[in-house]
Length: 543
Ligand code: FAD
Ligand code: NAP
Image 1 (tube, rainbow, N blue to C red):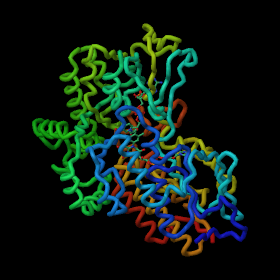
Image 2 (cartoon, rainbow, N blue to C red; image 1 turned 135 degrees about the vertical axis):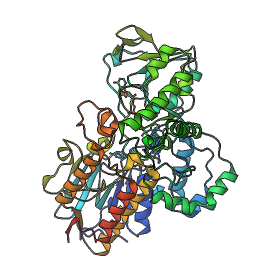
Image 3 (cartoon, protein in one colour; image 1 turned 45 degrees about the vertical axis):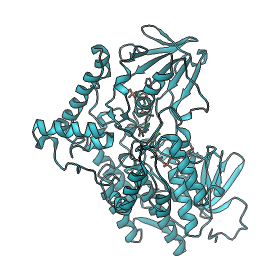
Image 4 (cartoon, helix red, strand yellow; image 1 turned 180 degrees about the vertical axis):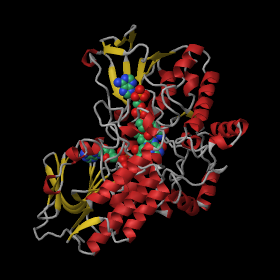
């Protein structure tokens, strides 16, 4: 049934809902929209589904949240039929999973691939959005932007890039069939991505040169195969596990041993060390971050975790000078998203791996032969950019979005993003964002977060359709209050101390503001539920 609310004959590309993006968020939104009986079209720039797991094909790409939790919970059948092969699934397995979801729930036929949305304009008279992608225009009553918080690759433009005779690959746009065997490879970037790929590149390259600007804190992943028996054990309590994740602080089920509610300062040094050692052995960066309750709010507590990891680095890396270069000093632990690794620090003990400290010897330019720093030229066949993303706002800012009365999203966000609950924006009626700025997204298991966002948005769309309401948008005062609450919560933490993508500091010229709600996924979900129960009282209704 189409409830578009317009008397015009429906053109071919006219839908109740247009969803942009066919990652985790877009796929689930389409499924929910179809379930409530509305028409939907998903527009996806890539040639396949999976979003993050379609684009990021670099060696070693895998999730850092256990796959049994970093997966959809909405279908018991799906949970029962899919067996994860590893504790942390690699990119191929995750991509296969999202393809399975697209086929199993009949979503694929509702997707236009290789369709990049360039603009979205609201027609206030008709209460409809019109989205342009190339020479096609799609009309819809509702737009759901599931364009991803980490979907716009950022690659610095080094002087002389065109002179370089070798190949340059970005981790998030990794071509098929790249063979680095026997090549002289350079990597710029030591975030989660660089840290995952560096040990694997070292295994195949003739020589690997790692260009590091900021040393990072990494914790072992401890990935391992998942047996069928382990899957069966998870399935036996899956419903409870998912329910607990949905009501938790960061979208995870309870851990064994339980996450400490203590301050790191409330225990003795020996007790602290025992906790950190246990977390180190169990593996997982997000688990390590939760070793104590106040690692991100109390500098002294954080220092204990930071120092523990520094000691580990010095123990693993044999050459003291290399170890010191790898030891982070300029930001507190986990104020950048904590990476996990398999043999990252060990890799620097290899004779065929060189670490270049860009703080000492910055990159000056690329030449035909390779990378020239202030010190020398490193000859390379391939340069890999693991330099991250124009995160959180990047994908939306690249679309010309114009709402009611000339509200232009790019202008509205010029000093940083503003919105309500990370899902709706004043001036843009019937326009929703999944995993958007102002939500807790990056501070959670994003599978849990995505499901919560999608369910709230599609319930709201269902409510509007059922009540024959043509449009709704958050009241400006609600948006102001939420934006303030979100930023104030961030400022009370140590997060703003790091030059991270959380605050936009990784992109030259981007406004430096904290972009997530960090007071807990549980608190956030309750607030979202309250708004729904109140009949969406924080929204202006256009009937
Ligand atoms: P995405 O998966 O990014 O999908 C967005 C889609 O929108 C993309 O396919 C993109 O092509 C499309 N799109 C964007 N703009 C347009 C446009 N204008 N027109 C058409 N299509 C467009 N989170 C975790 O919780 N745990 C993890 O272990 C984890 N690992 C990660 C590993 C990597 C390498 C990266 C980059 C991120 C990781 N994340 C992880 C975060 C991850 O992005 C989210 O978990 C989740 O995949 C986000 O889903 P999404 O649907 O919101 O966005
Ligand atoms: P990132 O965390 O932003 O790291 C980018 C790296 O590139 C940093 O080391 C940065 O140095 C460096 N860099 C950027 N520009 C540079 C320049 N001009 N010169 C030299 N170095 C430069 O990006 P990412 O590693 O791709 O990760 C982004 C996010 O994706 C993660 O935080 C995480 O949320 C997600 N992710 C998750 C996993 C996982 O394990 N599941 C894996 C990959 C990614 P500075 O620190 O000095 O800026």
